[in-house]
Length: 485
Figure 1 (cartoon, rainbow, N blue to C red):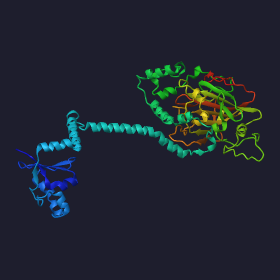
Figure 2: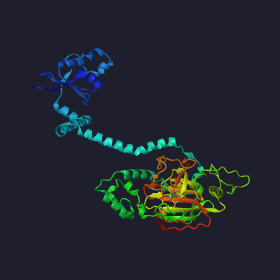
Figure 3: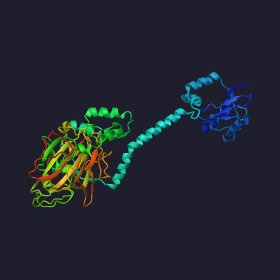
Figure 4: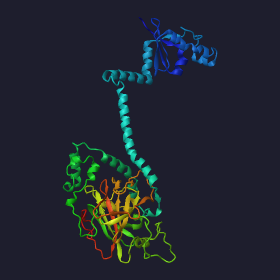
């Protein structure tokens, strides 16, 4: 049975509209092929079907219309069965296929289908299956990255941000600091957080955690769980619990160290200024924000003709300092700043027995809190993200402020489930705050307060008698539970 290919002149209009490839298999007669689109096709097995497809052209399109003249070649006459067939050379057809990028793509797809049918009978289009799997994996990865943004949207509904320009740092910044702040440190911290939350294979855990321990001098002898294989992720290893039996809390001390770390600065607060490092200070008012409650006394430096709005935080520094205190005549405000290195214990505890009444979360930058950076960047602890936990102890005001840093945007407070740190976006001069009720939380000395995802900084601000002498000095290495005074 001899077969030859013909070009169907009668189907030009129909094929261009329906984008189908028509193949006529009419026994010994011929095989007609439409010369329009070959992207989609179907097989016409009878001559009558071909005629039924071509015949509507004779009725729909007038013979003498301009459109009829354009779509029909001269000399073909009215579209009748058997007319308009022209023999096509096989080499000419192959040459057209070689030049057409669409036909090349179709041919390649057909070849892949054949290979797929041979190697993967259950899924012939295996490459499409692989692409779907890859896209699904990418979608799940992006969804996991955006999940915190969803939580952030929910938390914004529960906690509306408070705007207060008084908490914005007004210190002039050098070009180096501007460049440093422009770096995508928040994005890097979020990615780092996702990576550290990923589960590590059990076989690799001793290698990964062992290398980290050697690099940052981690003392696993003090960990409650000493077996590396028990920590599913790097973040879980960072937040490893401490064997408290090896760290007895000094029962004779009035205030103990809340964490493991290094003392950056300590001493009295003078005129509302806190020492960041030697020779560099920052505003106490900008660190803590406006007063939470109205001053309990009138000995805070009020001036005649000056009305102090304690909620706005706009009071001069020399007034804010005594207004924060319970007994400014007999007490002073003291500060202690502790730097937690990456190899240190990453949880922080209560330094005293106190009542935690208020939480204020300041979204901010995530600059490094390394002592070398603290010497360069002024107002570092005001620029960075921080959570101020404030309340009272037996001598008056008391606060613990964990400060975020690069790769440490995540700050967790165990008693506060709504705290959401390391937000994707934030507006300078805004913060979120929550009152823990009139009675607050009674926190015993040494109880765990929260944790970091990596090393960072803790700032203690507390009221104590004026004759108080701290058992600390800048640069000293200290451990949780040791006496401060």
